[in-house]
Image 1 (cartoon, rainbow, N blue to C red):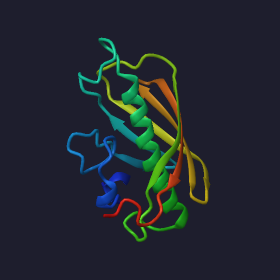
Image 2 (cartoon, rainbow, N blue to C red):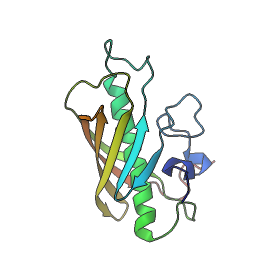
Image 3 (tube, rainbow, N blue to C red):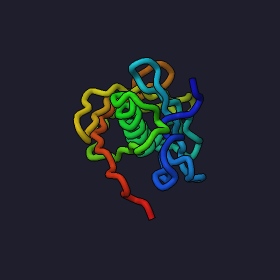
Length: 156
């Protein structure tokens, strides 16, 4: 078993995303992994990720759901094809639609756990449902509809 996250397998040309790009030193660099049939990522917001004192900025929460969803989509595609994430050709997904429901204010301080479940994988499309929990309480739910990036896209 490897300690690498889904995002660690992205080719360099697709690794600059603010939310999940390992090559973006100023970014969030979230890391997603499988936990059975669910994907999981844990992120601890910084004090400057505030909306109002004591609570996380909603845009950050949406970004976490977005990037966890695209990472989960890529990993699910490899899994469905029965091949490792470091095999060729590479699979990378981008967001076609993002729906975020803020259920309650998300406290700033505790680690946030994101859990994703693939609800559809068909052709170039993968749909992921995500739950974001802080201190054992679900604060945000999201749905990410992703599409596969075509080979050669973004290559210089």
